Length: 280
Image 1 (spheres, one colour):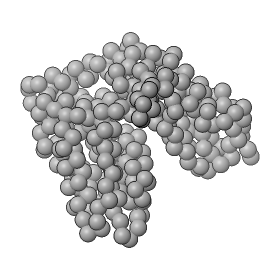
Image 2 (tube, rainbow, N blue to C red):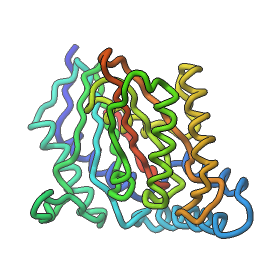
Image 3 (spheres, rainbow, N blue to C red):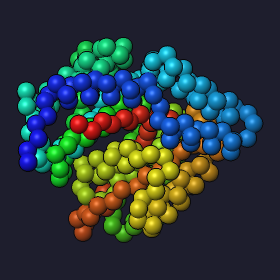
């Protein structure tokens, strides 16, 4: 049976998610920061983590952005195959929701023309990923992505001979090269397989997991933990001041790829790991 969802509902959901994501740091991130605080030695690293926790509290209570960089609006939408959207165009509705959310929430607008650098004025267009799934509901996940951490992300085409050890080394090396630039402690999304562009989307989607949620494949879960351990041995630490907490977690997603290729994407997220969702 076909179920109708109006663009008005979609606009409101995206508007509210834009503000919620920028004001309220997830409980999983707060828990991870508190756990990192316990592991850190006395000194600058501990003080930085304390400030991050306090910053999140102020943002939540006063309804102000966690970070001045309120990010580009990255929107993942899962649309049930039995859903019929009425009242307008889906993409226009999502962009209108972003426009309203970033305006009404007094969130910084960061979208600009890549050459002239002229700001679009309303943080649109959003970066929209659509997926058709079974059912009669729509799931919207909004993940504001800041520029500092995004700039440290990479896609590379390794040779198949590099294998999983090559993937691990590449991820750790990229985090090391990034240093303090992505505002650690970070969350690292890794996409392996597919094609050039698909690996990047896998890495981005990996960041939507809650901290501590391991890959259901035991072998991949073990690899995630190994990479995380190696990263935290780098000693970069919170905001690059040294310490044991360079990253809070590593998430790995894989898909089959061409026999001649080994695409690897690394999408780094700063400590403000913002993503909120709504189901219509």
